[in-house]
Amino acid sequence: MTSRRLSSAALVVYAFAVALGLGVPSAYWAVKGEYPVGGQRVGPWRTWPAVGSNRVDPYARAIIARRAEIPLATGEGLALTATADSGGQVLDGACAYRIGSTVPQARLWTLTVYDADGRLRVSDTVRAGITSAEILREADGRFAVTVAPGARPGNWLKSPEGGRFTMVLRLYDTSVAASAASLDARALPAIERLECGA
Amino acid sequence: MSEPKLPRIADVPGDTAPPTEEASARGLKGKAPPHQPAADPGAAPPAQPTRAEAPTTTPEAPAADVRMPRGPLFTPRVWDAPDPAAGSAPAPTATAQPVAADRPSDPHAGPQGSAKASAPDIAPLEERLRPRGPLVPLGMSDRGRFMVATLFGMVLAVGVHIAIVLALPRFAENDAFSRLRSTMEAGNAVPIAAPGRTETWVPLPDPAAAVAACAYDLREGPVRISAKAGPLFQSLSFHARGGGVYFAVTDRAAVRGELDLVVMTRRQLDEALAAEDESDPTRDVRIVAPRPEGYVIVRVLAPSPSLRPQAEEAARTVACTIEGEDEPPAPPTSPAPPAPPAPPAPPAAQPNRPATPATPPARR
Image 1: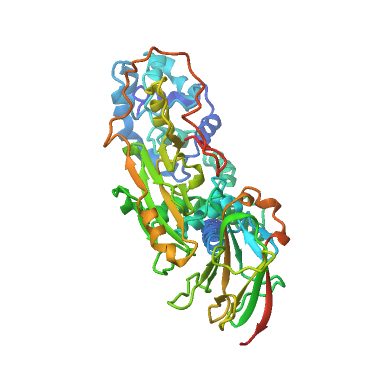
Image 2: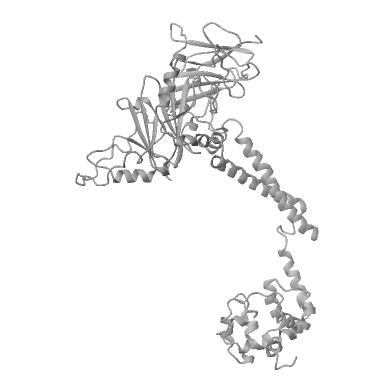
């Protein structure tokens, strides 16, 4: 009988240990990576339309607060993130990619390349992003941006050396921000893998 | 130990209440220690004076009877029985002692139980009390108890998880608002990310954007944001601390090249509406903030590197001033006669591009 009473106290301690041991790491894990809910996949791109509004979910709120993020508001535009190409393979800094050839209507858009830690790799001669105003287009209005380790003719962005990287396409002042749920993958640029190991 | 000196103790068991009933009455309180009867016969004589006092005590002096075992929870029939024998005001003493506490080691209760109630009467009572002890029913095996505890822990874990996620924005010390707190005093938006540069704390900065910010605390008054629309893309977004974006507008909403917005709480909006002159409605765009603390982010885009200085300059010149410091609030006395409430078009006017769902989405 006394052993039972002892184990009651031990079970209470055990229950609280389970609560802390599961609750704290799971909460940390949930706010560690990208926004866990509300994401939308359009081709290789991912976007979280609710993050730029007041309908943002608690997880995204926690992540935004933790990382001091300043999300693009729905009224400002829409940000689309890609960590893999259209074939589903993770973006690799050693590979060359071709991004094109259409973008939804927007007043201005930018395409930016970040390294694995989310930093810009810029220097005097190398830029990390390109805007729709700078881009060279074909006669029919189509375009192609090449992200490669070595210099390329045309629209070229240097891919960050060392492993995976991230691309963010930002559409400023666009009508699709309010209707991101109905975005078509064909309206967004594809990310085509050219060759690796350059 | 003569009979006349202890009228109640002698009378109680023999009079009306049988010892078993008295014992069960104590048993309901769960306080009857099994070893007490053995020690108590010796303790009875010292208790005598208080007991002798009890019958003579009138309702006017309840303080002396605090030790009397008549609590409100106590069944009265056991104790009321001897009172007619004592002859002096039985009912008043009962009502005059509302503070009488349960006394597990009461010297009067002890001898009583031991005097007439025998040990076999108390032993089954102890057995009756025992099942109340453990938290988990005794019939459950140790494995079952372990699983109940695991389940309980997992339910608690869900609560801990939710609590942490919900509390994080509130207690984050490195969120954007905390970093921007120093911009609260500045009259202009403070640049936090320059186009084409990497040194900024803003995660994933757009190298084409000049970003400036000013934090506000509406408890100091409404905040007026004034921006001049230039040739470059310019946007203002309004963030509540820990609560997401509640409003955003681009330079396309500018009237005659100017964007003039006032951020206020719902109460400040009500006050402004009450003080407003009907004949001269304001042209300000009023935005109700869901929380008093927040920040405004200015983004100006430089489509090409040569336009970056211009974008930085445009972002820096956005003014954020606390209303009511420089200019007095709208005069409370309106020269115009109180007209019937006109359609309130100007106050909550939305810009052309409404951006986020609504102006006053969340009321506090």
